[in-house]
Length: 127
Image (cartoon, rainbow, N blue to C red):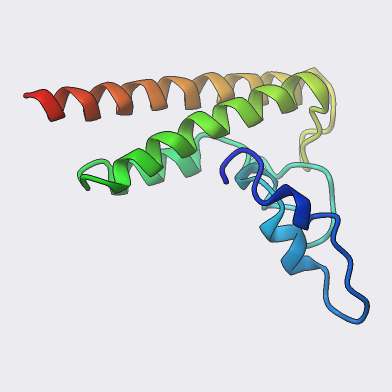
């Protein structure tokens, strides 16, 4: 869900129903900042390491939920890395090198955060 959501729902159209719930369910976590408006540009607050960091900070001590936090962090790293290469467009930063650098740095931060959380989760398991 962190990297692709229920992607098939994003293109679903049912006459006389609001479309934003389908767009929300069919989007990744990094897309949630602009999906209700129907914008393809990413919001820098959602397309950053902030969401995985908060999840890991809240869930790392929980025995089963820590794996959700690690998975979301790694999924966000992949999503942000792909967005940095293919379509780096951010709401306030545009679509140039600044947006590409922002997404790339945040992808690396998510990857590092996921690695540290995974290392912490597995070391506490065997200690």
